[in-house]
Every structure is written in structure tokens, then in C-alpha cells.
Amino acid sequence: MSMFEDIPVDVGIIYEGERIRRKNMHIELGGPKQEHKFELTRVRKPEEIEDGKISVIGPDIKDMSEGSSYPLGIVIEVSGEKLEPELEGVIERRIHEYSNFIEGFMHLNQRYDIWLRLDKKSFQKGLNSFEYIGKVLQRLFKSELPIIEKIQIIFITNPEKIKEHWKEALDIYEARDARARGLKDQEVDKFYGCTLCQSFAPTHVCVITPQRYSNCGSISWFDGRASARIDPKGPIFEIDKGELIDAEKGEFSGVNEVVKQKSLGEVTKVWLYTSFGYPHTSCGCFEGTAFYIPEVDGFGLVHRGFKEVTINGLPFSTIADSTAGGRQVDGFHGISIEYMRSPKFLKADGGWNRVVWMPASVKERVMEFIPKEIVDKIATESDVKTTDELKTFLKNSGHPIVETWKEEPVAVEEAVPTELEREIPSGMPVATIPTLPITTGGYKIILKDAKIYAKKVIIRSMKGEKIGEKRK
Ligand code: SF4
Image 1 (cartoon, rainbow, N blue to C red):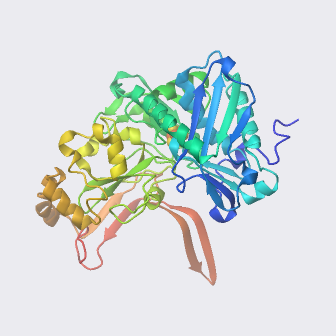
Image 2: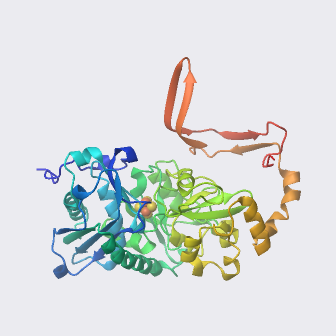
Image 3: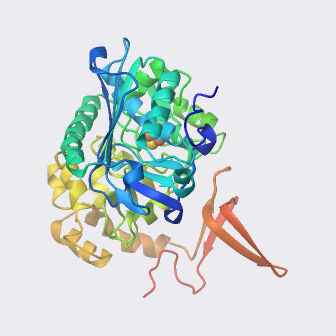
């Protein structure tokens, strides 16, 4: 008898990576429309857990109206002789993987950013209660991680109750993150890798170091170590650092080898502390992105929760799409909020001295980690709205980036040619295009997720202007 015989829909790894579009969804839980949402795992004493218990506080799925969005809190409580609180973050991250095994049920992101959808077909098949979701999660957790002896799950949909637990959850996340601060990359022999997001981004491998937190912001170096110990064949594994090739950029021979192997040869090199050259790949559930702003030669930062457009006129979702999918894109870089607190944050690119714009809310969150002399020189959405205003702001505030502009006219006039050539490393796509229509011989051929490879890219000005020269 199948483990999921009593569940009205199918459950299996084949459903991982399934996307549910708005038009096909029955309901949405969490996501951008909901301010309060979270998922949290706690390790408890055995006597505090009623094994197999599933509670729903607030309306259940069957009580929700079709096409609507609801807040959600998921609390998973576990006990086991060998379980330690250190494993909470790792168990919590598996909620993403196991929820996605359920046919017609999609889970994105993590912690306070979760976004779930149930599709109409699965609802019609009878998936109309959190009881079923809870049963699937409990069975998968126990069979995949036998270290868990007892498990109970609470689904909270009552908005008032979510708010109460949400604040507590934020404090717990902060305490977990703080634990990894202070440890340096050069003080450890091993890093950890994670391929959990390969279902959505097949070439993505997270490299988790003490000073480069995972992209999703939910797995620290300590979490990686704990996970690799209890489940060495699982998606989180040990990486021998190997030789230090470049301390400034953060290149290690062991990292290169493992990433090459786990990305099936797609990614051959990773520079951990830079957004240029061979940046760390970006999956899809990163908490934020750093994006290069050519007009000022600086970086903007934006997080998933920012609802307005950024200084370059694009919303988070568009910036995220231009780097997601396990790619290495020059100047566009998926990152966690915790990485912004690291001394290695974009170190090779100038660190905080290169950051020129960020939303006020994320600035507030990482304020104490931004060097005091630069903090007021970084603009937010309340200071400027356009890149021209940004330039003026940076000049008036004395941002260090302005110093580098002074050299620009001479260097650019002399050095920038009307033609640029760039060799492309083998195996690296020049562009990935979600939809590429080609019309030929009376037919239209549409290529989906087309990757374009080339040995060399040549950019030639059509009007005799220098490359990089801005048209009026
Ligand atoms: S973002 Fe990285 S660490 Fe987090 S689940 Fe995905 S692959 Fe793992």
C-alpha cells in the first residue's frame, strides 16, 4: 500500500518544480499580498509532542473562497533523541521540498516570505484541507529524516493569531543568524553546498560559507554542517575548500570542483565575494538582489518585499528574473539579507562603498552592519526617484563612488572603442530568453527557455558612437 493512499492527489518528486499560474489557482497562501506569513520549526521535548497531531487555527482550505489570498503560518514541532535545536533551520527548509511533492501544490521562498498556491484541479480532486498537507509532510519528514521521532503540525490562518506568532518567528530567525556571525571563512576547512533549489534552477548550487549565507537566507554554515551530518547523502553536503586561488574574489579550488560536478559542467568557476566575472549562481528564492547601475557605477540592493519600482525603473520581480535560474549574470546577483551583514559582502567590488541605493526598510534591517561613514550616503526611495536625482544625491552627500567618476572622462574618451569584443567561457550561455519566436517558411517556431551560446560576443556601434556613450 502506498504511503499516500488516503491522500486525494498524487505525491512524488515529479511534481517538484511545478508552477501554478494565477489563472489556475484555487487559493493563494502567503505571498506578496499578505504582510504576515511564516514557517517555523521548533525542536521540543518528547512529552510536548502528540505524534501525528495536525491542528488548523482559522479557516481550513474548504472554507476559503476561490481565487483569494490568505495569510498562513506553519509551525512544525519535532522531537527525537538525537535532535538538537541546531537542526531547526534545516528541517524547516525541507518544508519547501516536501510541499512541492504534492500534485498541484506549490511552495516558494522561505521563513517570513512563503508563498503557496493550490491549483483548481487538485482542489476538485479533494485536496480541501490542511489535514492532507499535514499528513504528507509528517510522513515525508519521518521517512526521509528518521532522526525525527515525533512530529506535530499547526497551520494558522487566523490573521490575529498569525501576527502573534510572526513576531516570535522573526526573533527566532534573527537568533539563528546571529549565531553564525563572527566566524570567518578562513577559519574553517569545509564549506557546505545545497542543491535543494535545483528543481527550479537545475544548474544552481549554493555554496554556504560562514561569511556567505545561503541565497534563501535560511541556511547558515552551522545549519549546513548539522544537515550534512544527519543526512550526508541529502541535498546539503560538505565541500572541502581546497586551495585558496583568490582571497579577494573568494575563489577556492574545492568549490570550483564541486560546483562543476553538481551543475553537470554548466558552472565551472565561482567567485564568492563579487558580482562580476563568475558570481555565485542565483536560484529563484533568494531574499534580495544586488544590481549594477551603470549610470553611477554602483550597486542597488532590493529585497523581495519591496513593492515599488527600484531606482532603475524595474520592480524586484523583473530584476530577479534577469538573474534567476541558476545562471551567473554579470552585475545581477541573488543574495540573502544576512550576506549584507557579512564583512565579505561584495568585497571584491568595493563592499558597502559601492552601494548607492536600497529600500529604506532593508536599510533599517541591516543598519548596524553598514559602515557609519557611508550609511547616510546611500540613497533610498524616499531620497531619490531617478538615476539623475541619484547622481546629484551622491555628489551632495560625498559618496565615495563619486571619486571614481572623476577619472572617467579621460579613461572613457581614450579607451572606449566603437567596437567591443568579449570571449565567452565555454558552456556559459550568452543569454537565456523565456520565449523566442522565429518566423520561417510560413511557420512560427517558438522556443521556450532558449539558451544562446556563442564563442565570442561583438558589440558594434551603428552610429559611430563609442560603446558606452549615452544617447541623448
Ligand atoms: S537557496 Fe540555496 S541553500 Fe537555500 S534551499 Fe535553495 S539551494 Fe538550498
